[in-house]
Image 1 (cartoon, rainbow, N blue to C red):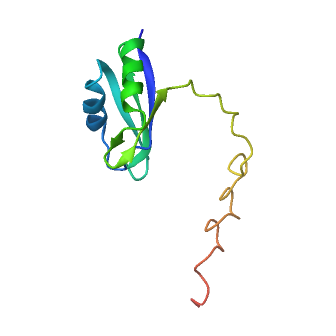
Image 2 (image 1 turned 135 degrees about the vertical axis):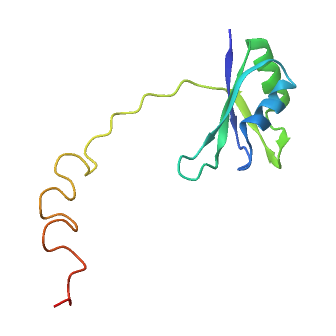
Image 3 (image 1 turned 90 degrees about the vertical axis):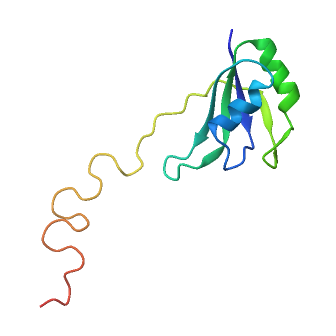
Length: 118
C-alpha cells in the first residue's frame, strides 16, 4: 500500500521536480508535490511525497529527516490525515454584507470621491 509522507522546512525555491529527484534515491515515488501559495505561486515551505510502499517510506524517513536540502534541514514524517475544520460562519461576508442596495461603499448616488466637484 502506498504511503504518504509530509516534508517540511522546504526552501522557497523548491519545486515538485526537486522533491521527486530527492525521494527517488530512496525508492519508488508515486507523486511529489510542493504546496504553493495561490497568490504568490511561491512554495509554502512544505509538501507531500507518496512512496509506493511502507518499507520505502520508512527508508526515506530514516535517510531524509534532518537531511540538509537546499540549505535547510528537512522534516520528514508520515503524513497525518487532515483534521476536519469547523465550517466557516459569520465573518461579515454573509447575507447583507457590503455594497448591497444603494448605501454601500461607492454604490448609489452619494459615495466617495464626489466632493468638491461643484
